[in-house]
Each structure stands twice: as structure tokens, then as C-alpha cells.
Length: 229
Image (cartoon, rainbow, N blue to C red; front, side, top):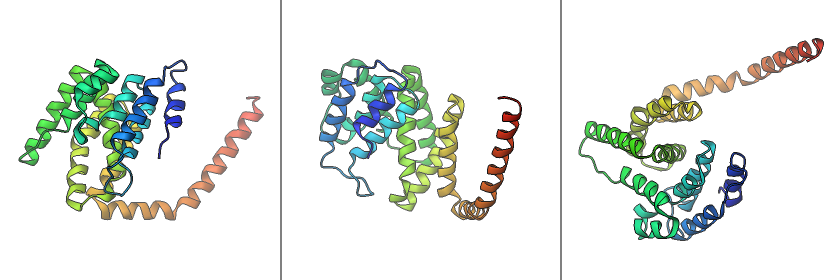
């Protein structure tokens, strides 16, 4: 599980003087709130909150966003209210948590309605505060990483929604490392036969590619040395 210190260390790489006391406080608070809850994998539910917060540090989000990432499911999945979050962590954190909670709260009657409404809500989230969307993308990425633990129907539904809505948003926002991973994960569930075939071929040629890469590195290194670089 991602530890508190890992999150703090990651934040300090891009905000050296960050006041991380609120991160420490929200980490412990969320862990306590989810102490009774487990995921489909059997892992503690808090693991998800910690992973989302750590992913948020890869986007170099501010401390307020990291706190909101740790708390993003607290209102939806426990008895904690937005007012309590506001009282403890302030209006900015409460606003982000409220936005994330609302993105998850709509039920849909059809696939077409689900996609259209999800996209509209995303646009509204962006208009209010881009950080809501960025945390949501981290949430979706971790959910996709652990999709093997849910039913096949949910796998297909979530993977298709991710491909239709979240992948294009990562592209438009220029988060290409996340776009690539989400696409690969979607492909794994939407086209498993093709995915496994490609993966098998890649594994079969791994040694050959490693040898070629080592040769190129050696040649480039020697060229740099010869030219005094």
C-alpha cells in the first residue's frame, strides 16, 4: 500500500516547502473512515484512496488536491458529510470532494444516456475547477488497474466508458502517459484475444529487442566519448 511518507516525499519533489500537515491529517482520517470497508480484491478500501492521491502527485497537483484525492470517496461511501469535510479541511477541499462525489452520483438508464451525461458532467467539472477532473482521471486509472476483480459485464462497461470519455480527455489535456496506459488497459478488456496475441509476440521478441537496445546504447556512448561529450 502507498504510505503517507511516499505521498509526502512525492509532493516535496515539486513543492519543496509544502505544508504537508493537512495531507497527514487527511491520510489518517480517510484510513479511519474506511477501516471497515474492503474492495472486490479483498484489499482494504483505503488502498484505493492512497493510490489515487499518489497518482495525483504524478500530475504535480497542489496540497489541496492531494487532500481531496485522499477524501474523494469518503462522502459517497461513508456517513461523513460535505459539511464535515468543510469544517475540518476548509471550503476548497470540500468543493473538490463535492465535485468528485457528484460525478459519481448519477444513475443512467441507457448506455447512450450514460456517456452523454458523463461527458456533460465532466465539462461542468472542468468549468468549475480543473482539479476535479484531474483527480477523477487518477481515480479512473487506479480503477482500471484493478478491473480484473469485478464482473465481466462491469469490466466491459467501465472499459468502454473509459475509452469513450476519459481517454479523449487525457489526450486533450496532454497527459500522454496516462492516455497510453488507459488505452492499453481498455484494449485488454475490450479486445482480449488480440491483446493477448500481441502481448505474446512482444514477450517472444523481448530478448532480441534488449540485445538491439544494448548495442545501440553502446554505439551512441562510444560516439559521445569520441567527440568529447
